[in-house]
Image (tube, rainbow, N blue to C red; front, top):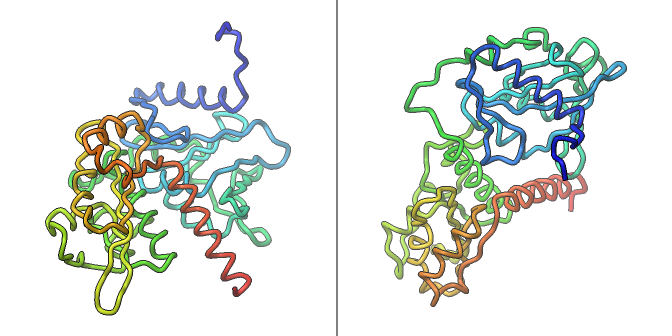
Length: 312
């Protein structure tokens, strides 16, 4: 197959033109490979690029909730909506867009239907309700000169995704009625510190485990039994290609036969290499990809909303 003859979709072509435009500003450009969405680091910003071919009176985009959530958690996050031409691009801060999501229609799968009118304003629910995007149209200065973030507050993409996966696991546990614990108090998920969404501020001490290891496990779910906390699920998020210490940390719960151990990662090959060192306990561990956690989280939120809607 001759790749040079491969037809480029209109949206891919617009995205390519957008990146070429960014080069005119001498901005460094890097594709964020950790995320599945078309997201780039341009200068000091992270930007999700979406494109729609020339419309009649409106431009239409589809974005999944979990994608927006991942982008909004990055440092200096933006979404670029290319409306038929690079010269008609809305470069909106992702956090502003994220706050308006409740007023944008979506389906049960968390797919949001983004409409941008001919004046390049984002359409919201309600008559003549819009996000005024006049200050965001072709605003490359906003993208290339974002607010300065203190060095201590900066996160790598991997650190941000790690916090997102922890946050999703905590929220799933909360929805299911577990008591949840996470050691990363200051990391954020959806503008909240992780210790604001866990139900346990301090990790319970257990008789048959090393407490120093136990309290470092990324996410724990407990059940109440009288005044005691019984561990039922343990999760470690492994995004680094280096040493996976999480498998060893969870082994401190090995004497609790009911506890299930989960490794969350997209590197199945690395998981297999590491788990071979724990071959006698291999059946206790389960590998789950990052994307499946996102899908489960979205499904749990939808089910929660549906239960509320029908009162059952």
